[in-house]
Image 1: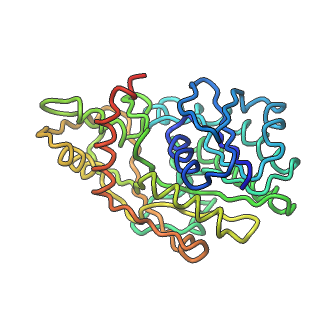
Image 2: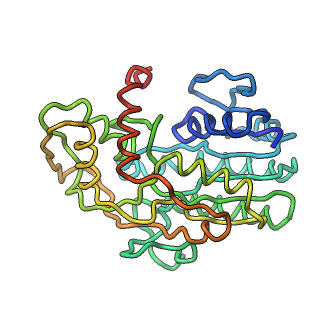
Image 3: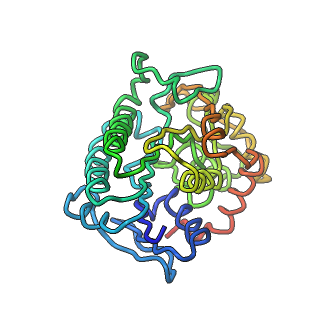
Length: 320
């Protein structure tokens, strides 16, 4: 991999991926794209370029002479925006990925990795496989826009892969957490927001809903390990893979773990009037184990401890 194009290099996933790329591929040039956010790391092998991925000319230009594209750029937010502003995740993401897949194909990029998600899956008491997605089953109403946008991009990847120029990887990852998460009470997913609440509270914290919703959670280091395995071992021109912990955790149980490992003694107040997404989901990742020899390594308790420790050490950084 002589030249790697990392999109979304200033976001949560992008920052962790960039750190991993620098360590894993020390001889590669990494071109990082940023839009509103500032450059945040300096390295001799990292080249920063500012631009708008909704601009076709910019997409055409940056995908030339590239070996690998890691597409971590997206308009994202937490459950509050998904519930109250469901169209937020649709237009920008559809536009930018339409151009990026098109020009990756036209410019003969070797490998394109796209971060999808799991919102197209239905509730289930058992871990779901990739083939368990059923287009005839009704998608949760508030997920309808974002889910179909992700599915559209997945189909774009499959469409261009069939022309045999570019290898495409689609990662349907579960809820990712770890260092550099947003940790924002308004825009973060529940994990990052909960860490912020716990660390900054003295007597009690408030959670949205009754806490019985269940999520599959995965530490960011395991996601980067997944990327490395894709680069080294994926054989087919197109593949969709689940990437998750393999079991679901109740929100209330995760909140209690965060409180425990933070060393706090807090009461939990449940606000049933706030927006929540009532789902139960976990991922079967046996396909990834079989094809690319990937298995989740980080225990949930250790992952939570690592995240809290990072947050405390980098609190000032998060205020910038």
